[in-house]
Amino acid sequence: MHAAKMEAPEAPYTPIAEIPGLVAAARATFESGRTRDLAWRKAQLDGVIRMIRENMDAIHAALAADVGKPDVEAYTAETSFSINDAELVKKKLDGWVRPQRVRTPIISQPGSSYVQREPLGVVLIIAPWNYPFQLAVAPLIGALAAGNTAVVKPSEVSPATSAILARLLPRYVDQDAVKVVLGGVPETTRLLEERFDHIFYTGNGAVGRIIMAAAAKHLTPVTLELGGKSPCIVDSEVELDVAVKRIALGKFYNCGQTCVAPDYVLAHKDVYEAFLTKLQAALREFFGPDAAKSPDYGRVVNARHHKRLMALLQGEKIVCGGEGDEAARYIAPTVLRDVEPDAAVMQEEIFGPILPVLKVESVDEAIRFINRRDKPLALYVFSTRRAVQEQVLAETSSGGATVNHVWMHLAVPGLPFGGVGPSGMGAYHGRHSFECFSHRKAVLRKPAGMDPPILYPPYDDTKKKWIKRIL
Ligand code: NAD
Image: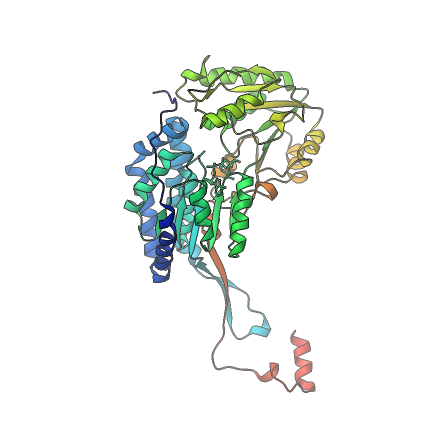
């Protein structure tokens, strides 16, 4: 079946008047103390895994309805990704919760010191529409593993997936601990008036600022998983055939609506023409002569984004693609050449199937170009030269980076996934998800009785001598 965007069913919004009660219920559950229990936490992770396994087809259908997501993409980036994450977290949890001993200095002797992870309380998770299942579930896995209760607010832009989350989660996890709120700006605004112990937001930076301002009123810490223009450097010394395929996959996956998609390419002048020729060939190989007929090519989420993306093509030199069908939310995989740095397409994150390819004279020029702009969520460099790889990594700043591929770093559970500067703050995935939703409590445990008199006044010369010797 080809992945044309289907009409999404309307998801019923949560009545605003019910929102404070839902948050209060999640808090009461946290205060009951049962979420601290390791067996409870693992049971929740099991519930998440079962929920996905038993409803995979329905989840994939919702993802197809919302964003025309091809089945393989739904499996790799949403359902199986979430299962693997939950399984890993469950397997490692015993080790992660164990107190971490640190050295106790002589001044605090006798005693033992350690870091103890404790849950934060009630967390709010606000998810976007582009990976609407995974980006709600992956933070939830971290929150539950760390012993928190959670309010989940999926995106109103992906109503079918939001509806399925609201329907399934209460059946598979502790429904007193996980509450789903459906809605858009008014519902989220009301939610943000409540006090949470952590807010985990994924989406654009403009809303990120609103979230942070609302959180500040309660001194609530935030994790902001934002976006931006992630650059991709192609050096003159490069395995060009492989580079082209990897970039084409990473850009046009989910129809370009991926926070870590290569937003634009800075290709060395020596390989510029060859890169463009091979890229056209790769796209034809992937999606055939008409990508609209490919079962493996997605759709733009809605008419607003379709219009925005088509407008970016105005006045640009199109190498391939450029065709759009608003009713079907289709935009052909599009490559642009000789794009000016001040072009509209180079100002904002593109977030669609349009790839501008700019020519650079050198890797130094590419680095200067990147460093004059906001720090991106991800950065990619394709080069066979170790020195060039090292130079790019050392001289640029980004949330994450992959060398000779795109966005694969986010599938390494040991690596923290998050942005820097305008691309976000905080990180998660694997152990980092557990840490994100845990407080690291510093504990010094001393014997009750043994009490050397040295620190107490009055300080005679002998005491002073010892204090100065010890400290
Ligand atoms: P979106 O429109 O679904 O919004 C995200 C969430 O914010 C939704 O739940 C929405 O209800 C809420 N929201 C919207 N306006 C709000 C307001 N005024 N007040 C409170 N809440 C509000 O998604 P989006 O922002 O279009 O998502 C795309 C952006 O997200 C891109 O910039 C992309 O790069 C970024 N993104 C980042 C990551 C990451 O992991 N870093 C992942 C996916 C997407």
